[in-house]
Length: 595
Image 1: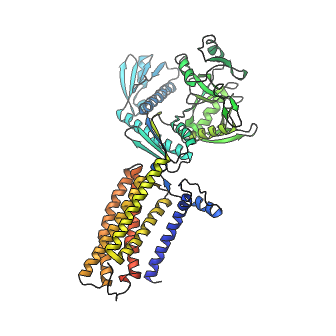
Image 2: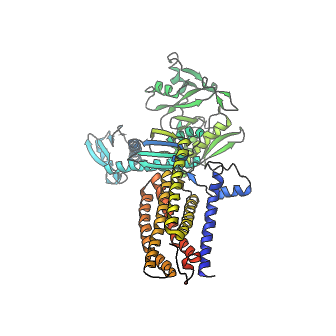
Image 3: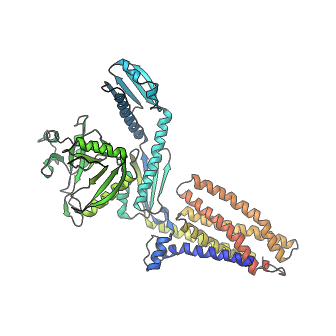
């Protein structure tokens, strides 16, 4: 095989790969929308192509979608960390000396923990060995048997920073589980997170917002079965309008209301330090088969729960949706890790015949009775029995997503949301496409008029260039945004610039008296360094943008990098091959070059 044949083989393979990469996009766009749904074609071949290929994805600015901005309440993450540290400090002290009379408190909003010993001499328990477990706290003797443990400033900042990073990762995993193509989750400022969900269907907007914002602190707490009726009985005859005292399913008393917020306001400050109120929605259906809820008759019910957390979701190893074969109803099956299995087994053994509340934040997901000790680390969360099958399954799937991907390290607060309509995207596509076409046509006209025959080769190389860029974007699963289209336009200009450098060098060689063959070969060889320098320096800038940029900036950088590789290949390799095959570089006896 000759050198020229080998080069054409490389070009042919590149073209075939590009066509293969573009076919899914062509099939997807045949109906006028890049929505990953092929409507105009069908058959096994089409299904195989769409399953194995990657159609080009449009960004939020081109196809519309949901834009959300959240603020991570980083101070709450620090306070929660101090609460856990306070519990750990007391547990360690009591383990070291059983029966020790000590009170460990973390004042709300403060960055320290106070340890108050009844016997002042016991402050010696907090010695160097004890503090070795608390490397991020500084010890201060306050007198009167009190020791203050203050969190280091560096650790406070580290905790805040980690809370934002973990929130970004948790949100990304939850969004990925929604199946949104090419979502963008980025940090803005110190504690803000911007979420872009391109192409999100309108009926999925509320579900996405609810799933993203869920703190999902899964906790296992015991219900106060003995004290429930006495506690709620005190409100008989004293309930405001809209509140009701009823027995749920013939069981314990419960105060109910149509609004959860109204219940929370009513019970604020009405429980002691050892108890709290749990809430559970009780839907009543107009048509259960179709999932139509009667909003007028549905209500929220309350549970009287011990505030002590017996077990948390941190010990969950796996969560999945399963179907109860007896009642044909979805539920969430949980597997605990080794430590969690031990704690759950102990909890169930000590509370046979009692109810446990499985709570997600302050919502009671289910309240099963421990009929017997449950060993082996397996449990299940039964969803609302009054809901339709589809609603129970959807709720179970959403809960599994949250449990598998962890809880948010701190609550997040929505700052604003914007639903970007597809009309704006269509208008943006139209204008940017028109700009690309007009710019390309003007470049083609200029090259053909100014460089004549060489201009034809340049236009052919430019066509290959655009095809390779689009195929590269599609194959990498990149998202095409307005900045990305700008990157393509810039790449077209850079490709022409490379041709101009080469062609002007060839003209210089012709003016120096060299033959057409020598001028073409010498022109390409001498211009190569200039072309490579220009593209490499631009590529370095694009790499920096891709590394540190986010969202549209990153999209622009990816497009630019693909364009640089394609430009070097088409302007240097393909253009020279065309010269060598049909132009003045094809024969040493060529007497002229059209340039």
